[in-house]
Image (tube, rainbow, N blue to C red; front, side, top):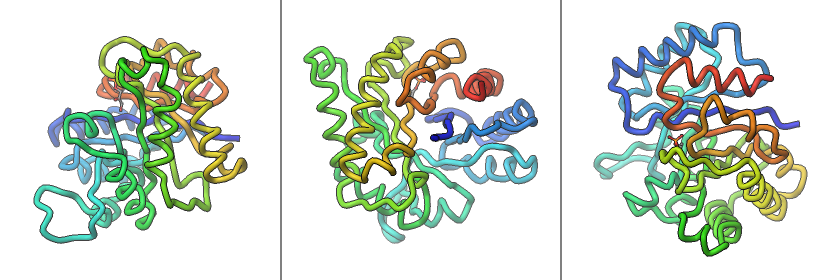
Length: 255
Ligand code: 13P
């Protein structure tokens, strides 16, 4: 059985002090533990160390994730963050291929693939985002579009353990718009992602890799997504910026 995962993508929100405050609040909200639910928070890069310290000091039941990485080991890449820098401050996960990075920063599937390989080489778990635009969905091509993204993003990757990789299906038209996909929409694509993973990595691995939904997921709609067979949790943007709403989503996933 797959254990559920609720991950928070704080995006470009929270100064260092605010991030420490949010992580502290979340540790308090979740002080009784999260059962079998894996919880991850992904603050901005400059906040990572502060959140790592909160996790350590409060023995918080959540793991640290970054929002991006560069694939080179070190060197003259101004502004970038290397995988071993993430490992060194305690990051266990890293989001790659978010539609905001693909859209605003022209990240390609080839870039995402390089990042995935670099992370795996450093034992950091990629949270590989994928998802279609409204235009692609209206043309009825969303399933094939997402399947192609996943194939390109994971090209040449060999997985030994299903816990080494997480996929997040985030339809672009549902991100930050308040417009959620229906649970059926999410299942249609998450199911196709799992079939693709089975063709790439074998059925046993695919059956245990977590596939998350993201896009205006909130405390009052999370339960609907979690009833779907191939939706194993959520990657949460806006609703992860307040300790009480994010904790409510974790608690919903514990039921
Ligand atoms: P929202 O939950 O704000 O729609 O963001 C989703 C997202 O992009 C998470 O990565």
